[in-house]
Length: 343
Image 1 (cartoon, one colour):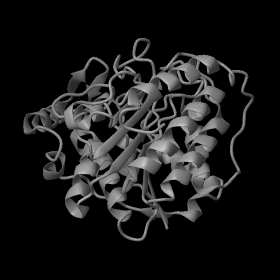
Image 2 (image 1 turned 90 degrees about the horizontal axis):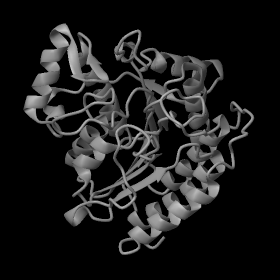
Image 3 (image 1 turned 180 degrees about the vertical axis):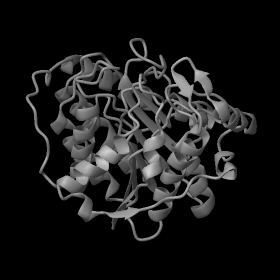
């Protein structure tokens, strides 16, 4: 079975008229899925908000209290992250959506989607990058408690490095955290170098592939196919979480990668294939800041996950960009991980 968690309150996660975060994106995603007759292939499930005890599985109480305080009248969490009135409630709904989607995977569902989640910049006691609570980490800890999970694979393909998730799990070998992102020397948050592979017992369980600006579809798909299937096969995850950010699209105003609409379909097909071994795939939509392009790219991801080839296609003049550079980076990454994985 397949499901999508959705509530109208998701659309209130909006940081202001002049802010790049698109508050209406969840509704737009649902509308296009309905228009294209894809939504009927899913159960639409109403979630519930995360409670404070859920947030405390990951976040310090002082940090949660800060968000509550800012939420009362509004304020600034970080220079790029205004905290409008009510954001504590809206962020709890975003987190609860991912948690509830994760719970459904341990019932009769094989694929669950939260069109709002993916707030990967939130760490235990600080955040920025439009994030308040790390719904991915809270869900991991929640499901660990419920189901004694020992192996969770996070595939984060947002254009920005998953610094919050990495900070939380750098020392934890139960979470294999893979982040493909634009090189931090050229983009926020400035982290995620190729030579950081974790700390202590978690060494080898952090995988960073920092991609050069202008990376095109061919190079990106090469990296996906060279890294993901092999790591999944060896790690044997009990749960896969896919942060499906689409700010890697060539029209995105906040970054500089050059993926096409059809590339997202192909990426999703690879992830669906590797997820077929554990039959538990949780997808959160992540970033995307060109309103039209983001909705189309996310739609293509959903089609790829369920193998429905009725997708948006566009010319791809950037396809070959940075191919040789990325091949070299993949070789370097394999070498860095060779002590831990056979790649």
